[in-house]
Length: 163
Image 1 (tube, rainbow, N blue to C red):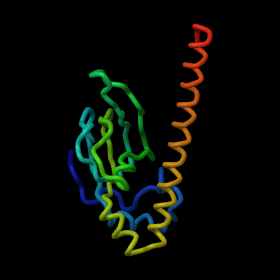
Image 2 (image 1 turned 30 degrees about the vertical axis):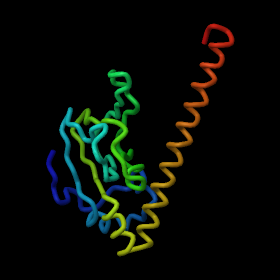
Image 3 (image 1 turned 45 degrees about the vertical axis):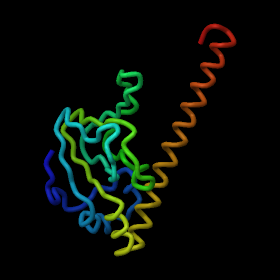
């Protein structure tokens, strides 16, 4: 992994930054840092301290959890997806491992850097936070739908003996 200071003149409007006005994108590059990962690099290790929110700008990542000593693919992430949101607001260890499946460019920001951003320009900070909350809400809604579908499948299986 390498850490260039700023390989882009401004952050692209993807993911939780999609609704940040374009004129603020260059301002945002002054906060956080850009990280490059190569194929098969571990971006986050399950159980390790995790204190940053990261936005995938380029590349593909796999989110993997080890249940009963066997890896389970939880998600494949790409441009505009984010990782680490939960620990930004509720610090703990990482709940899954994230592995780069291609070369990746990621923008990462810590809670302290996000707080500085909000203090320096509350309008931009609010725009970032609204985007982040929207993305988290969509992800929670999606997980609720998956759980409901899974529960229905299990219930139907127990009632009929077949899916």
